[in-house]
Length: 406
Image (cartoon, rainbow, N blue to C red; front, side):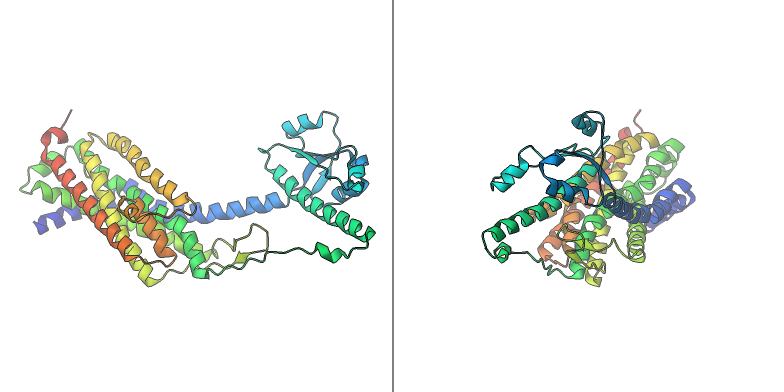
């Protein structure tokens, strides 16, 4: 039995290596696409954010005569261009000809002198991303203006301006560089592992099942003195091997590119440029790497058995692709959802949900948390799901009414 399984597995792997389409999906795509997708995406985002920060925004300043002091501060601000337009200012904002309108209302100076509250109107269009810069700039100007007004009032009343001293929050991040790096990797690596666990072996699974139906070679294979279970297991091992190679290449190329590119830059924990920047280390402990590899193997086994079952059921290569596409979305959507919920704290039984459990476990391990209850439940559930999927595939192979359905 073992010899037959190995023979079938070798045969399918040999056919896979000869198929250029499968080689592209298994090797070239993860090897080239992962660094481009990840590093390129983050560098592009950094450039866009930097360009946006340095952009000069155009505004209309209305009611300058109502406060020469405030309007002077606005005019002297860099990255803020005051323009004159012939049309209605609000319409110009709607048409995005200007980025915002600042309106200093009538009686502004009188209210300030009478120590009354006064509003400064800012008209913007939220879909215009440059208008966010206007809010930031004007907020900074008004903060300085308010401080000056208060100091003047206290000075007039012979009160020491030192009473304006305020409490400043100085953040200190106690997370280590490795924990911060693991937190970042926890958003990326689990998703990539799940994605390539399916995509890596997809073409091989389709080719060894639905593809054989189209080539009319399945009948001759079934006529050999080999048990159906041996055929299924041999094909299953071939699909799993191809998927494992794809995952290793994808994660390896991503990780090497990440280190070679110097990471994703310092993380900012406060939202203020230059404040709260912390160093990030993307090193992974050998223990964490070993657990990731073992769990990934069982995840790959489960997905390989599932897509093989789907492919066996299909009548043609194209039909198998149509079946696998929706099933791929069914897996990826919950994974993406769970992976993107901030502060999500799963209960114990979440680690029994296929694919989701692996993502949750990967995130824990990458930040240095080793909960052996979660690890064992994840491994146990994946083994059970894999066994069930293999049994289903064997049952499908045992029914000629399904294999050769019209």
